Image 1: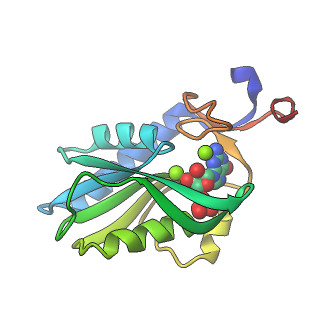
Image 2: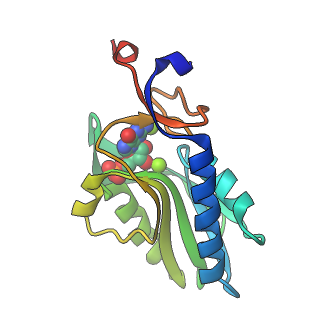
Length: 178
Ligand code: 5GP
Ligand code: MG
Ligand code: MG
């Protein structure tokens, strides 16, 4: 499986160090507040698992699954909810946990959707962000790594549902696509 990778962009150690750092900031920012971590399936599974274990205290998690209609690899921002939150988020402080922000269209839709449910606040934490994300007005409070505009896999991110279990984030070798 490792042979399918062309290049490792971020190592396991770098990911964990960054999530520890973000977890410390988040815990300080939300001190005394009713924090709910909201993951977006499936890509955010690994980020959620490691981020929440890096928190100095405990916070509950909930999950959403969405499908976004897009032409091929570009997302359109038109989103359908496949699995909604279990929790009522009225008056709660929601932190959306994501794997990657590319165009930002999906996240911007999710953020407004959650805001419309009268949450006390809705912020975003993402492990990865691509330069395109800068073009959309979505305010991402916590960012792990800014990466180049390349298709990456690993640490939750898939190519045709594969490679989510890689411990690193990397790019795929050309032979995988052919
Ligand atoms: P956005 O609406 O921000 O353009 O779309 C974000 C979604 O597209 C992510 O949640 C992810 O599922 C997918 N995506 C964007 N860039 C990549 C990438 O480099 N690799 C993988 N595996 N998925 C990506
Ligand atoms: Mg995602
Ligand atoms: Mg995917």
